[in-house]
Image (cartoon, rainbow, N blue to C red; front, side, top):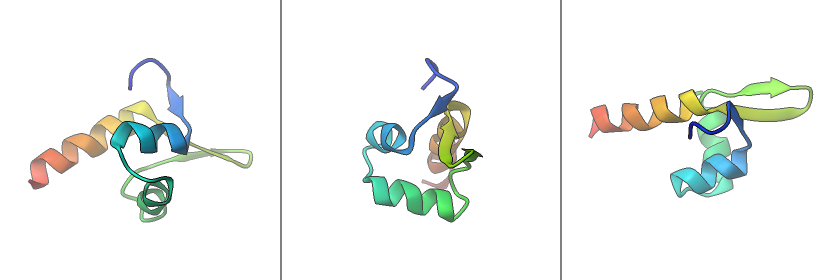
Length: 59
């Protein structure tokens, strides 16, 4: 996820092979950090990578 700085929730969900609702759940729980720009929620590519790396250390 290095081609853009910010991603929409559906893009992140597709990348992680998760549903949109599961991705929103991760955002609400604070597991997957996000930013709000006006009324739009975006996720940084670096945060997606960090989330994936954190999964590796738990397993």
